[in-house]
Length: 379
Image (cartoon, rainbow, N blue to C red; front, side, top):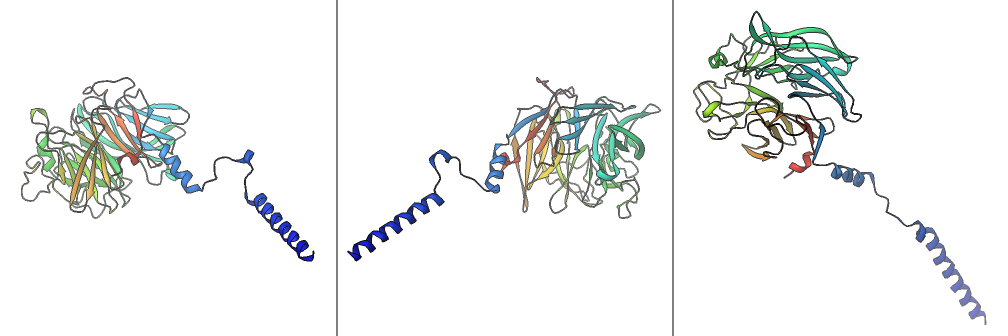
């Protein structure tokens, strides 16, 4: 009898323990739902839901350059002479018309860049075409951008030769904190080899326009022998790269991606493609004589240089490999002429179309700013 009582007590204790365990660690049917996840998988899920292509602005007039004030706020130069503020979240816009802009051909309001310390000094730089005594010139000016207005203009570089074509116009601050500026040959090819002229060059100055002591020729010139460079970017080893328009007309082709060195001569007009004269630097990559990229702008992102193709109507990706460069082509013919490429603060790649510049086929909504998720380009 005593053994039977002990056995019953043991059964009661084991059953009670099992019931308690179930109550502590099981989920009632009415409470069942999706399991909780950690922050990392959630973050990955959010990234995967960002569309590969998103149009964030439409009906612009030849947008030439972009600068981000924040994730949602950006400034855009329109070649006709407008500086456009856009809030992509609220849709708010504001337009500042820059007086004195000479817009026509390839000239007008072109490059735009913010000072590296813009948050404190509010310095904004513009590259634009203007006239002086019936002469077409290009200028770099610094402004203070505050309360939606441009004030306190300071001329940084003036008297850059201009023309209806080949005005260059890209600007960027380098890892050294200096301002780099591309200029075209202004339809005078021999000027690219003339070290007394600012045309057909890449220029380099301090943020106030003064000349760095280590510039190779004692003036603004950093490299020369360029036809119409329109892209500037640095890779993760701080090497400077530039895209450049090759010859045009019926012999169009031989567009270039150049690795820029201090004091380098890139050969225009005598050297192009695989024809490299002594003392000149060959292109790191060129399109060949039968293909035209018409490359505009350049952005280094995730080991590749992305650049827009105007006549090529594509987004090009130059994958920088040890000892070689692999070229890929994206969105061929899908958006038309692609001018600017910019990496946004959100890690996305932004491009502008240029179909209203007189050389493209205008599509509904042109011109546009398009956000691209770079994950779609992963190998």
